[in-house]
Length: 174
Image (cartoon, rainbow, N blue to C red):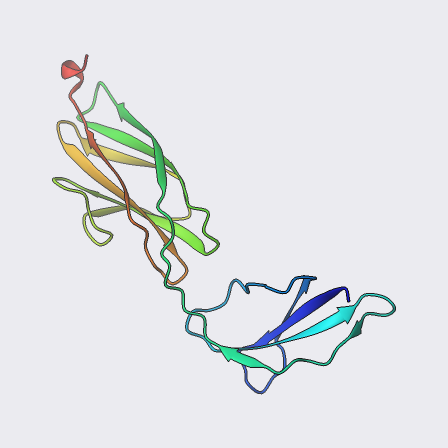
């Protein structure tokens, strides 16, 4: 025997809408499936030579994937404060590494004065599949709190990567 094929479908009346040749493995994880969607799955075994002889489909099983695992949190590794001598505002650049989860979709970056924002609080600075942002027009003399949440396709949200930044007036800097 040279391998297996996994046939799967969302429709109970179809034998297969999708096919994956998984090679010679006895365990395989189907990825990219819709959460809370029923799938009907069957397998075949095949010989590559001569002429790719394939066994009949196995009995089908029905399963519904449910993602309950939130993604890993982003790793924040660089913060830069950019101030302008002729202005009363500054900008902050945040750079991080996104988690390597297979179903990672993006991040939401939130900013707030006074405390770290939850994923629904404060000002949304950015939302998408990015790893650097520049937050502009920040008032000098204030402390800003940032939370970066990764999210997946469901969406489930990670624990936040957090940092607070105080924009100090130029004349008070060392």
